[in-house]
Image (cartoon, rainbow, N blue to C red; front, side, top):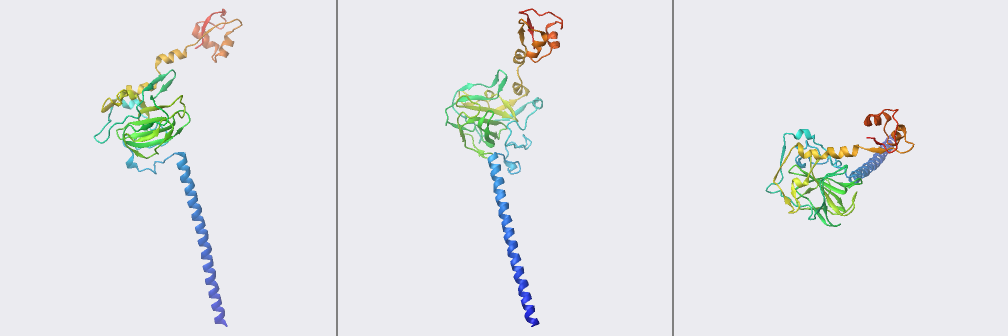
Length: 300
C-alpha cells in the first residue's frame, strides 16, 4: 500500500512539473512574439521618419570621413557647419580622379542664378526642366539625405562625394534613392518636378562644403555642361557670400515719414514701433519741437 502511494505521488509530481514547463514555454514564446512585433514597429518608424542613425551605418563607407570628422547626419543639410575663419589658409579639393568623373545633373538652362534675392540668399542655381525629367548624380558618392522638406526644397536628395563636396537636388517629383545608398556619377537619383516652395518645374542644384554653399558657377560651366577645373581651391572669400551685402542692409534699414495733420511724435513712434527719443536723435530735434505738415522725418 505504501509502495502504491509513493508511486502515485511521484507520478503526480512529474505531471505537475511537465505542465508547469509547458505553461512557462507558452508565456516565454508569447513574450518573444511581442518583442519581435515591437522591433518591427520600431524598424518601421525609423524607415518612415527617414532618419538613419550613425550606429546603423558602416563608418568605413562614409566619404571623406576624416575631413568631416566622421559626421553623418541624415536630417540636417547644414551639419557639420564649417567656421569660415578656419578656411583662411585655403582648402584644396581634387574634384575628379581617374575612376571618378563628372556628370551634369540635367541639361536645361539656368533660369535663376546663385546670389542674393533682395533679403534672401539663393544658395544654388535653378536649372530648367520638365516634370518627370531624369536628374543625375554629379559625382560618385553616398546619399546622406533623401526626404521631403515642406519649407522649401520639397522632395530633395543630398549626396556626399568622395572629392569632399556635397551636392543637393531639390523640388524633385520622385526620389529614387535612399539614405546610405552608394551612387555613381550619372546615375538617376530622381525625377524633376515642382515640389516644395516652387513656382514651376525646375531643379534647384547646390554645391556645398561642410554645410556652407559654394557658387556652382565656380566649379561648373553650365553652357558646356562640364567642369571648369579639376582642382578646387577655396578660401574664406568663397564663403562670405552667405552674409548680406552692406548696400542692401543699408537701404532696407533707412525709412522716412511725411508729417500729416494731427501727427505727434508720440503717435508716429507708436505707428512705426520706435521711440520718441530715437526719432528726435535721428532728426536733430527735441520732444518740444513743433512738427510742420509735410515735414520729412527719418524713422529708422
